[in-house]
Picture (cartoon, rainbow, N blue to C red):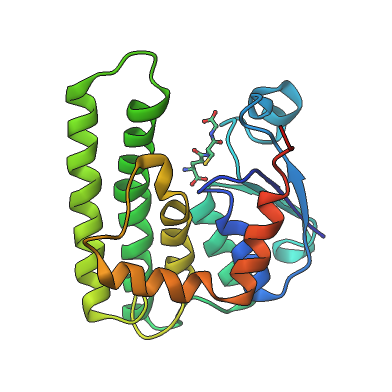
Length: 212
Ligand SMILES: N[C@@H](CCC(=O)N[C@@H](CS)C(=O)NCC(=O)O)C(=O)O
C-alpha cells in the first residue's frame, strides 16, 4: 500500500499525478498546511522537515517499507520502482534531471517567494517583490525557450520532469503569473492539464481542502 500525505499545493499535486499516470493504488492523507498540521508532533515524527508531500510505500525496495519526502525524490522513486516516466539512457535521464533540478531550485523558489511577498507578508517590501518578480519572469522565459524546441520539457516523451514543472504552473495564480507572453508554455500546460490522470489527481487533492 502507498500512502501519500498531501494538500492542494504545488509540491503535493505532483505525487498523485505520478501515481495516477502509473496506475498505482494509493491512499491520500490530508495534512492541512493552512492550519499548520504539518508541524504537529505526529507528523514531524514521520517527516522532520514538516512539509508535504510525503510518501510511505509498505512494499519498498527488497519488500521493506520506505518513507520518502521531497516531491522530486518521490517522483524519481516512483519512476525507478515502475521503470516508467524516466528514460533508461544516460542522455535522456540527464535531460530529465536537468529540468527537475531547474524547477526545484529555480522556478519553485521564485514563484513561492513571489507569492509570499505579494500576498502573505505582513509588510509590503517593494525590493523583495521586484526581485522575485524579475526572477520568476526570467526562469519562465527560460522554460518558454525549452518548450519552443521540445514537445515535452525533457524531449519527445512525457516524463516526471513534466509533472515536476506542472505543480507550480498549476498554482501560478498564487504568484500572480500568467502565460500571456509564453505561448509554448501555454500549449504544453493545456496538453498536460487535459491528461485524464492529471485531471483525476487534481480532483483528489482539491477535495482535501475543507469547505470554508
Ligand atoms: N522541496 C519540497 C518543498 C515542500 C513544500 O514546501 N511544501 C509546502 C506545500 S507546497 C509546505 O508543506 N508548506 C508548509 C510549510 O512550509 O510549513 C518538495 O518539493 O517536496
